[in-house]
Length: 429
Image (tube, rainbow, N blue to C red; front, side):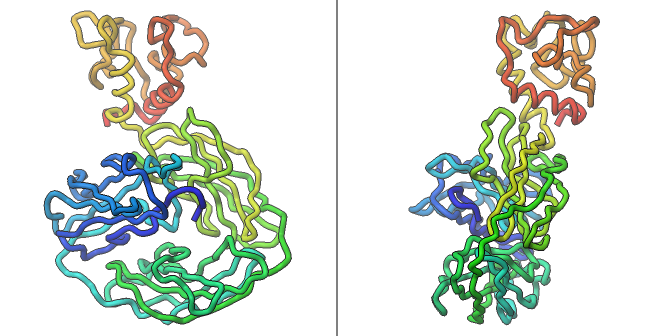
């Protein structure tokens, strides 16, 4: 996990749990204290995926603000599936947003049922530990077996210590993705002997209790050459809070592909760039990442490769991406704030230019000059030509007057959001 940013250590019920009680409370444990003021029902979302209706309830915090508990107002519906979504709006006291990793189940889903599994998985523990570099050791094991949970859904918790038998089983060093049978532990000290224990957890939160210990010593010779990597290739929306990032795998002078991880740097279109603190980090060997927990606005992404010695490539390839843009959540509020004052495009007998921007119906109907937008074509949309200073003075039949009137200009992020909404089809969603 990335230092200096909070991240979700554990989410209960766990990912894909299939027999959650209707009375279940939802608990999320964070790596450090988070600001309760940043946790609300927009940054901590529980949604019934069967009905698409958000669950209502109350949020409470432990004394250290490291655990959030959601208590539903009513019983969860038996047979329905629920999703837990955390967003990067959750912050710590330093203002650092939530760190999202492929090893952390965000979003997480579970299904409500009355049957509850209490039997722990059968697991013999770690099988081997092999030094890969001066800062990393790879662990491997044979998959656990469980009476209810399939092997593809069992996750593994990694515990380490520099002293045999001294692992802290209350605080894992890492948690694998479901179904993993190997894990590269990074960020270790050179020339140091480490002792590891790996334990399994099924879909219903049952842990095995094996104490099998494996050990290995990190190397002493340093590799100072970063991977060769061309950067991010594409970014495409996969939902209202997620974007799929895709790239071609990096190569390295010392590491094989499964040992190369990728760090993702995300910023809003109007935000400043920082390359010292990634927003997310993948597991090794992947060539894509579904970045969730995003707000409905435009983002810019940089992806960098990092080898097992911690060497990060320096590419600056940055491309934009926007989640599926919602008219109701993202576009109408812009018009309400900037365009519907008295005498402008408000609901009236004679709105400016004959165009009403109070509702989707108003913008879809257009105004006296014709349609306000062309679905899928922002540059040829009248509303974009009126608000975007980057477009040259409009030619007929477009009028040259910029909007909003009075010399005020929309924020660049608002313009990008309107353009992206039109590009995605200008839907009433």
